[in-house]
Amino acid sequence: MRQLRIISLKDEELEALSLADGKGLEHEAAAALMNISRSTFSRILAQARNSVTTALVEGAALKIGGGDFHLVAGENEEESSSLTMKGTHNAST
Image 1 (cartoon, one colour):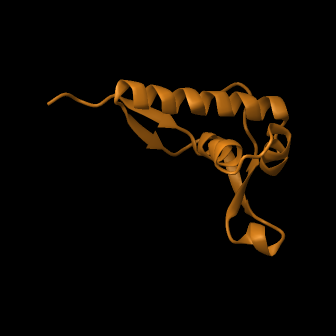
Image 2 (cartoon, rainbow, N blue to C red):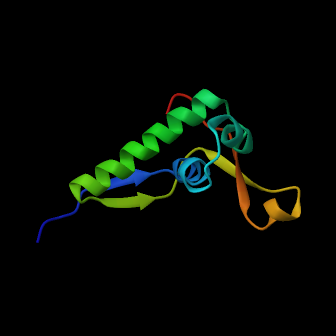
């Protein structure tokens, strides 16, 4: 039996996928929710899509976790039901 290659998906990449592809938000709106610039959001999303695609095409395992962020509770009732990522994303990663 072969060893599966592991592809890492950071928590902020998962959040970017959820906001853009899951909820259909525009990059500007999703970036605002994550408290990061639109260009940083687009970079995170591109990396996330690349990781997921690679895992699917190559039959690799997808490991979700880690990253450079902190979580804060939302201010209104809808946001409070789930935690929203507020970015402290390091542009060098």
